[in-house]
Image (cartoon, rainbow, N blue to C red; front, side):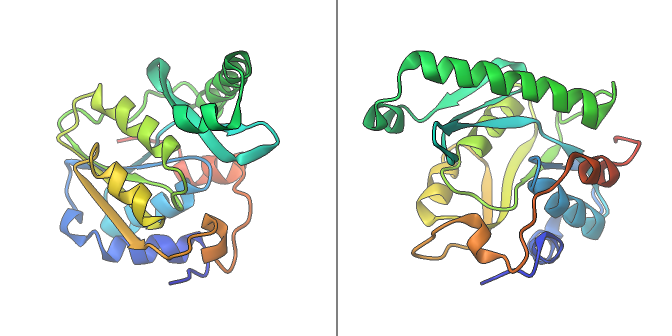
Length: 212
């Protein structure tokens, strides 16, 4: 299954999530940057609240698209220790990258939310959305941060991802909805006809001035 773009992916994903349509106890959270356009379309189709879930991938030096871990709000850090060991990445390097990404996380909070409080997830069903999964470390960090806020249910929803990543996330999320699990997987962008970089301006436009 290939998707034309993130809007098309969001439309198709919403069709698989109709059980949550129109429910005031549901909130859609998009992972920036690429997950926000998908999440926006899902929230629009389902007529539910939308916000952003701020997490940052820790990219392997020289191969930034390969995640060796991720960080999220509240000081949560998830590391792929086996990968770090296998690649021989020094602990000091991991820490330096984590500090840099933490600064970017704080910047995005200022820009995207402009001082507004995040949407409440307490006792609500959270649809946690990205434009696709690879290692899943960013999504795992997001799940762990949400668990500290006592949601009623955490649903990971993505257009595409490797089967093994989806299976692993099923052990920590309440539900995983993945429309396509191709083999071989290659990369998320390989399953989109159009996969442009999402900008801060686009995210601010999609999120709008209010939260629910």
